[in-house]
Image (cartoon, helix red, strand yellow):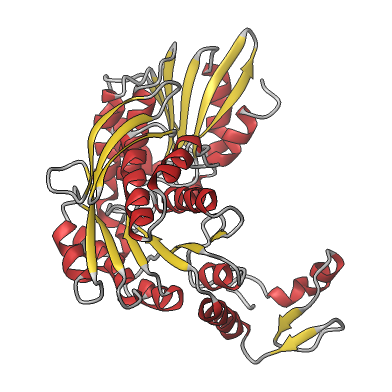
Length: 416
């Protein structure tokens, strides 16, 4: 495919050298190939064909935060229910290229398919959900991610609600009960869904967390009420946001007739995801420090959620390395400054702020928290290596473009 910065045809020879059996191309090559006028259209056609041939139950997932974690948790649940017969989109393959690619990769014998769908503009999810055609469509949460492209959060909710337009006849919409946009999402779902289920902790949620207590080794022990009874299960990942994700997972499994108890076992054993909560160790002279890797993405809601996780972590000191949150639009300064609240509530001992967009937060923290504001990830790594000590718990979080993944890799690599 031809992209904005390069042409995929440049890599055909390398693909065959690495073992490719064939290629779809727009001009002839000296290897087995199918020639097409438009490789992107061909990829979409492959996705459509893979979706048409399967008898799998399909779940589509979107949301401002939590969609990748929820997708992975759903896959873990379905793979435990039907070992070897579950499929999901890998990494964050959730756009106009990643979705048809993930569909095209789905084996014919799949029993459960889980597909993440993202967007940065109105209308994008309409196209993606028409490809996926889910039996269950989940919106995890609404937050001001991609705020630069929308007038307000309500407009973001409307764009996320497009996922329901692709529901198969008899399909189910699953929406967050505790969201201020709950009713808006329900209205978006009603014309397309045979049923709408809500999940959350508030009174009236269809799948509701009745009780949450800390679990041994982190995570939460949850007692949830479902439409058909109650379920007690463990969520292995720490944080209230993971309990919310888990409730959406249990709701989807229940709707599709899966064993929710088996799904609960999968949730208990779900590992941390790289860039989204993975826990790593930094080896230091005299001991070790915990690294919480949240380096893949950041918006105000996920910042607050992961800072709360840091605040609950038993540690000699709590250190937050926070990169700028991108694509927040005209409210960017306000959103950055407001992170001061959850940061101080987490009893952070030292904050390392990365990127020029963090200036409003630096101003808000003046005199309240020990912090340093640096320009880029390379400088952040240098400062962190000087300040980190054995027994510290270090949260590293920011938008992917800030490059904090390199800080994680360096800290959790060969040690200091």
